[in-house]
Length: 226
Image 1 (cartoon, rainbow, N blue to C red):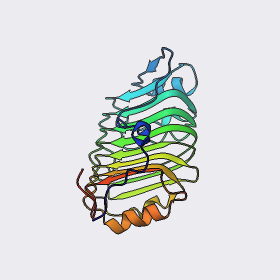
Image 2: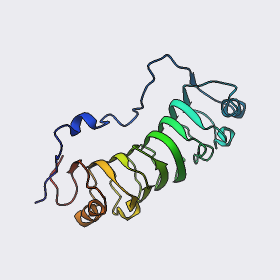
Image 3: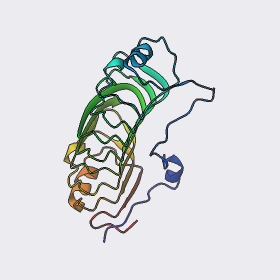
Image 4: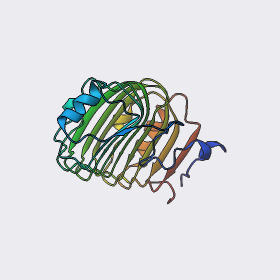
């Protein structure tokens, strides 16, 4: 039986273990902007409001087009519990942000976005109807986390080194072929992927150069339980 690999004694300290909802914070007090109208979005994008973080939570937005042109948010952009929001179009110009967290948006079915620059964390979780997720990055040392999703299709690409990849509780994901665009990943964490064949995991790991410095895999075919 294959075993979970713990290859770096310091690895645990490197994990962004509370990834779900976790974003890096500034040491200085910041301003959290909470837009609820298109005018609010446009004011943020135009720089009329200076935001350390942008929280788009429990709104009636159907799209985020008003944020087109927004390039920098020092801390985080969170998109949370927006009943009618169907995609993230409008965020594609972000090139400097501590973290992007997308959670509990029930109208998402397919998401396809590209980012470049300095993106610290990209995290998707608990979007109940999301089936296909495609993220293309050109950013160094990003943390990618996908958890508690019913996705059947996952595509992740980044030509630069990725710091951490965490896939957790993805009951319907059966292939990692869409991850071939990840050139290297320092930390790999796969938890509870019951539909994933062991051969898919091994093929993905074999394609990384260099090999990850820390790996933990459990509740995947051929690996021990978590």
